[in-house]
Image (cartoon, rainbow over all chains, first blue to last red; front, side, top):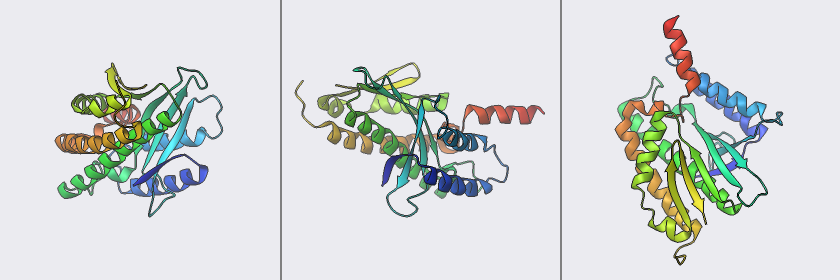
Length: 183
Length: 54
């Protein structure tokens, strides 16, 4: 189980140490620039007042609770307005779940996919829950590149939306966005 | 339409359903799952392109 928190400097520092340690195993087999950019951008947001994005983190409830298993980039659009809503712009998982890591084997890959699915589902629904708590009108999830779009569109098209609709939440897709409308 | 279950209950159900569906889809993707933005990004693809063309 995990918890969604606004990223603190302490958690970012511990997360950076852990993620960089994990990335050492990559041995230059793939570019790690995306992970570095996510960490650097999160750090810059502590001082930048221009950036609309707020970084959130998913931390485990047990074990290393100070190191994030995922960083989330959220934008609160039109705060204070009736039409205020949330945008989930990006999710970045901990590098050890990346199947490009050289120690990935078939069984290990299944374990990683299981954990990745758990983190992704928790990330999406905890942000949706946050939007409900904040009485926002909707949550929009940005999906790019094509791999994200293919994965999430196919999943959301197959979802049983009956329970969601009966609770007052509707889900739809528009271009690169998946949209939860909260009634 | 009458509210049959609360939003929180619906979100819990959604989480379980999403988790299963994502796991199945990742299984279909296999090693290609790293192409998701959860692991890679446009910046990485650009870096790879530059490295391969150098």
